[in-house]
Amino acid sequence: ACEKYGQLEQALKLLWDAEDFDVNWTSFSLPWALARLGVSEPGLIHTSFVEAVSKLRLMRHAPRDLSLLSWSSSMLSIQNPVLLAVLARESALQISKFQLDDLALLAWGAATSVSGSELLTAIQDETSARISRDGTGSELETFLDTVCSVEWACSFADQRREQFESAAFGLVQTTGRTSEHSSSQRCLKDIADGTLCQQSKTFAHMREPHYILHLSDRVVVLKPPEWEVHDEHTSNQLSLWHQAMAPRFAPILRDNIHQYGFIHRLDVPNSGLILAARSYEAYSHMQLQLAVGNIVRDYAILMHGWVASSLRKVGARVYWRDDGETTVGGQGKASTTDLRAQKHVLHQIGAFTLASVRIRTGRRHQIRSHFAHVGHPVVRDGMYTSSITFLLDSSICDQNFLHRFSLLFKDADGNLHRAGNPLSSGLLSSFVSSTSKR
Image (cartoon, rainbow, N blue to C red; front, side, top):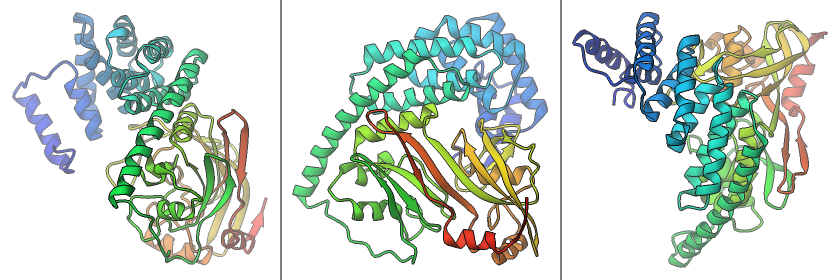
């Protein structure tokens, strides 16, 4: 409850009171609570995990407890070799008793653990077996979401198994076709009842989106700055534009549970390419591609300062709550951003670096927060720079200088497609007008 309503100080007080009054926590409730709240108190974290190691050695624990401890150790960046080794061994012994969503939590813990390789193999083998056994039930959507989480963790750790990927793609086909049928029936009923009609929309922004690439069941859209993919926090919604432009009715375009068909997002201030599905099968197929790292996303950004050519990767963890800033540091979700400095730029207000960036994970505000963390915030970023810097940046460009210029993905037949869009004329002119130096 404290987490839900943002009462973090009250939550911490409850944790401290529980310690003072000898509240009988379940085996791993305290580490889990610390991870959920994003607590960074070293003494409390150390004590909670020392106790966890002792309890692990004394008795066998329920799979749910093991999965929560695994996830907690990952979020709090715990690298205690004894804890992780015992946790991996105990989890492997009970792998068939884990619920599927607990396997996903266990996988993320193993993906960031020094002792997780063998456990990830066991998790993939167990999940493959469950796909074969249970992959035709009524909860296919939930099943697929969890399978994608396991795939994502294994891909992050570079521990993917071919058998598991093959089983997962088979599940994608089954799930997509089932969703297509049920959603089409539901939409036809809504049309007959008059509860669903074609919307007309006049968009307020002078720069409108447009399609870069059309395939039969998936498209690539160019999002201008100040457009939101969906969620209705701004007047210009990419989801409504996509509905209006679609050549034929597609149920997924009006399905908020499936993100209106969009596979990923871009922050409102940013511009660039976005992949969208026009069928449920295509959506499921691309979600799995995203999870295994087969969708390649490249960005062009202009950062403050001259970035050394030796800086090729930022691997700091990120943590966020609701709509606030993303915090970067030693705790949170594992994240990786690769970069290559392309050009150093001198301008009257300072020095800058134009860089190409590729993300391995797609965390909230990942690129913007990562480079602010290393002292090179993105130009014209109102959230991760000071108000004075933001105003001075207006002499360079009028939008956040972050543009997704390339997407690489596969179609339903496994053929590779690359969609590209260079820097917009506004961003390009602001860059060219600066005095540059290699």
